[in-house]
Length: 285
Image (cartoon, rainbow, N blue to C red; front, side, top):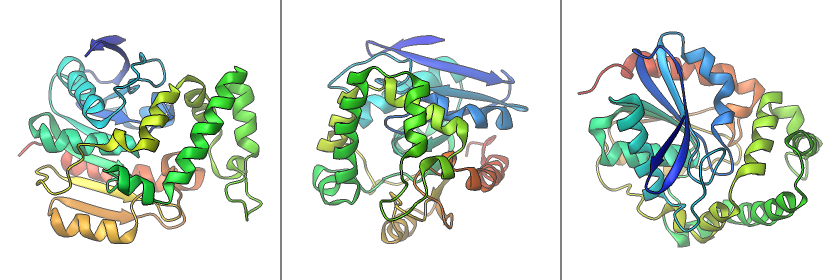
């Protein structure tokens, strides 16, 4: 379905039991709701699973100049009000996780709990982005995205290119060795569809403005942090737990930033998520 919010049409899909406890899945920058296709059917047997494309991504409308946390959060709030119609548990990867944090913190009446997958929670200012190890990666991705989209390649062709890319310059392993086949296809589609202006906003630091890690968090939050190339290093995780009693952090050994895409880690991710949903998905304090 398409719903209009703040002048943008958002692509939203709903699966499972319409009367079940709602869960909303949120993707990261440069991705789309397609990245959750594999997970939907594992969760939808007794729950309502909703996934959305953030503005500028997937099949949602483009709106350059509005790719920031406040607009993503406002769009999510519209989905909660118009699609789920009641509080939901939020599951978000990377920037999707940051959007879940922002929404749960400001609109707790619409959120039961939040499960965040390697969110870059401490990149809330241009200075923090510029000093992070991710900055150069963002710049390279922006340059590569422009070249890729200019060639107008098919999703299948992009997926084949991704399959052969090295995970690390010093390692013989490729993305195809690490990621599930459906993850490569979803990644290719996301890169083909994303508005490049979203990466511009990420590189400049504008996307993360408004992130508040000082205000209290009243809802239960579970953060599943990556091990290698994590967006939430140990010192940030320790600070987060020390200042927010409702937050729990676990680190998945051997995982990279895209935990949900990695074949060897999906099983553990689902196990932890199911446990979290069993504890928190149906209750609001």
